[in-house]
Image 1 (cartoon, rainbow, N blue to C red):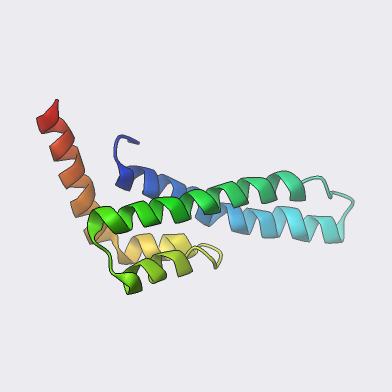
Image 2: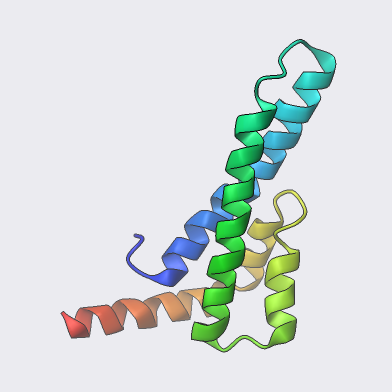
Length: 111
């Protein structure tokens, strides 16, 4: 599954899209309404790492798929709202599917 850049982007986009709501719900909200305040640091760290990985993978796809500045901006902007990366993946599904198939075919022919 993680054999190509599109698969890695999709996985990280999914995890990043879930990490921010988890941070908001389990980190921020629970620390305000209860004594559970030990979740903020690990959830924040996980979300930060996933966000950086998402940005780097999106920039990698920009080069590989020939995205212009607008498409790259949209991909990066959708990483900010909760569940936003899911929206971007849905909007770019056809393009990501085609790129993933092309990368899989290239890898199969090289092997």
